[in-house]
Length: 115
Length: 114
Image (cartoon, rainbow over all chains, first blue to last red):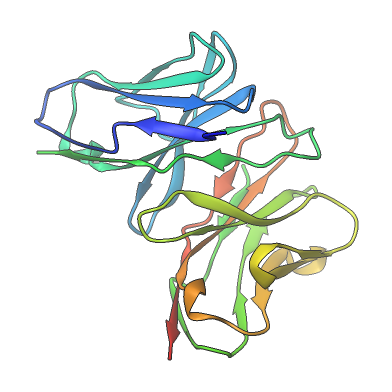
């Protein structure tokens, strides 16, 4: 089991460029999440998905889009990158909170720098 | 909306000493509570969780946490800290409402001195 994997691990973008971050999980989890982590801010939820074909906004969704075309994959897109989007991005997956086995499993992160 | 407060940004503990990391939450009903640990350059790993039942929960790596409803707290403890425990620790809360999501505290960085 690879768990949760993220591609790429590092990326440098220029302002205005676009990119897509890929998250994949092999645990057959219904729920998937995208967070950003900034110093002193903890983790903040960008978007999440409770199943294939469904997505919802989190705490800080502006400037990002997501898609969940397959259950195992969750894509995060930046259409026009801004320096404020310089951050470390984490993907996670889980069962529903109603499950006694609930926990969020995290990927290793993607470090994005926008210049 | 629920919120989580970790009052200490940094804590330094001597190796072998005991540790307590504080976490307070704000929500009317009983929340689901979690502690995660993040080593440098890594993702987050679950240490322990509280859903219901016994208010003292045991986790991995010798950690434990106690849920105190009267104080809205879920403090993390370890009786003897090892140098390998140096990391950032995050408390998180979820409530069973709609599509429940986790709300994280801002984290406490633990430094271990020899």
